Length: 224
Image 1 (cartoon, rainbow, N blue to C red):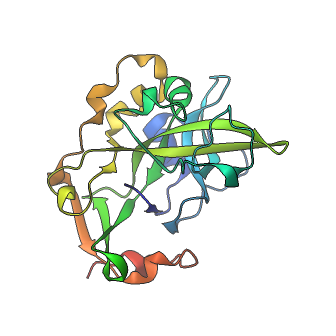
Image 2: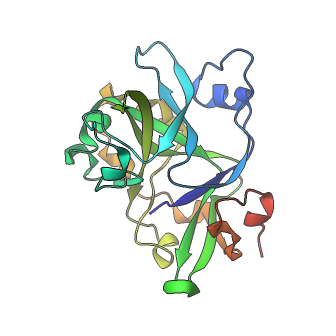
């Protein structure tokens, strides 16, 4: 699972170097966030619908498929996470998997271990890397006359490190495969579903304030 993540400041130059992204004119890069929660609006990297260029676009976290027309509150699916191995066959995600892939830029994510109120949150990130990308899917729906663009984060089985923390982990994409993931015409992507190497990741316990969506400060992820 991936229920929350954090993203430190990333410059337009860094985005362009990673995926050849075209920055918008006179717009600042997104601010850092240390507590991105479901049902918030977060930036995703994607091809435009016209396939003219790669952009960074704000999307609602919790995918709503294009065929959904009822109020969001009536959904019986969360759309927050989708299993990478089965997304291509599930009605909620299969259209987006076939046509609309994206990358979610993050600096790390949070997981909770334990039961009930005694759950211990952990921060997880990659070693020696300020930011990286998680595989996602995006879609557009018309809800109550308004266009809603939304995304989901794909998950895979855990690696050896994550197995002690969670039954699933985000599908982390290697930089050399960013363009391949973004292009749904690039062929079979199942080899990308393998969990990211445990040796390249680190995790540490943090305080409970991460459970408060109003908190957004670097102290959330300070290593104990």
